[in-house]
Amino acid sequence: MNARPDANLTPSVEEFVGWYNLEDERDDGFPVLKSVESVPQFEHAEFFEMYFEAAKWFDQLVEAPANEPFDPLLDPPFFVRSDADDRTLDIDADFRFLNVALLRRIQEEFLGRYPLWRVILIAEHPSCSIVIYPSAIRFGNKPVDVDPDEALRELVPKHLAMQEARERPQREHIAHVQRLLPAAVRAIGDRPFLVAGVLDNYAGDYGRLTICLLIRGSDSFAMKLRGSSDAADDFLWTSIPFGVSFDGAIISCIDVPKTAPYCLVPWLPPADYQGPLTIIERESGKRHTYELKSEDIVRTKRE
Image 1: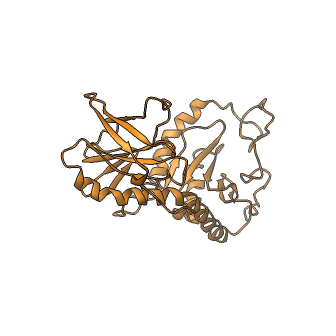
Image 2 (image 1 turned 180 degrees about the horizontal axis):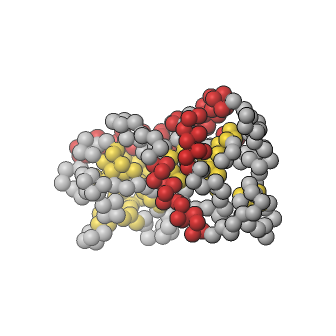
Image 3 (image 1 turned 135 degrees about the vertical axis):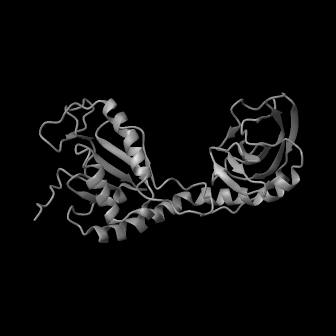
């Protein structure tokens, strides 16, 4: 029979704030937790050497469902963060893919190769994060010997509910943008750009408007906007671009494929701005004037 893991050596995220498996104490006042008596010196080269193997290994751990509609907010099942200041590997995980067998694989196959390391599957709240040690798996703050299936049945829905609440304003915003696009791709004709519409918020932030600038082609930097002469230089923000198909569907987020017939760039002036905006074609320098009027702003429902 295996001995019960020592909870003091395998703490949860909330039970221990400090460094893991470093050779010396740090001068920042945080403690160092060591899983073995003699820990070799940690250098960032150790992490970078392991990172590429880890990214490849976790990328092949599960297969994302095929033929699902594009979701701009959906991340890969496992995303390995590319930084580490101790022997902790932080991973953004899609908790819908988690099961006990998969966690055991991480523990036995991956940490079996890197026994001085631990893996944290980061959740919306530390109380749901899962810490995988070579000798134990901690499910939030549940006891070290909790039934793993029972723990997952509780933690996963809790995490997903918090994730849904956090993403709701952004999902509602993307839905508003998507509704503007089919008509916009029909209306753009042979013009280099079209203001597809103006929304009264940006992902729940009613201090900013969203000017939905549809651009012909895949170059999201083809156009730039300028405010009136008395507006501050930084009064316009821009957000991540979307690739748009011929029928006006969002097909990508952040990285616009070169094959995309259009891209959508959100520009974000202050909510109280009214008046002219100058849209400039970067390549030719040609200028166009767009008059921002309050009656053209799409009013969305406030919570």
